Image (cartoon, rainbow, N blue to C red; front, side, top):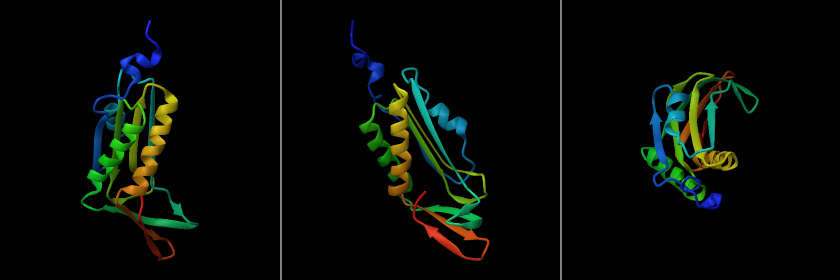
Length: 153
């Protein structure tokens, strides 16, 4: 009998990056979750970033995201790097651009792996690396009339 790690389902999929996108319309949890479905995955981790009503002690009135034309290609590069580091069966990431309201989904990422621990770790690495490496900028306007640009997701 083969050991657990010898089973093909324990290995990374051949082409695990299933969905990458920058969208100017509402994001769908169902779309992202469906994209990472895999019969060999025992764990799926999903992260949803939403627009909150405050930042740095100030009330947020308006918020918009914009991106560099290379953002989607950079998202794919980051996704492929994460998929190479973990036994990823399927991976998806979408980010919103344009004007958003409090409570709107700004980013949704998901990773499925053979086991839950790997899925959690890969999903955290994916969102952290997207935030730090993909050229997406957030423009916040506060209730006191001030505003700021933030160079991250």
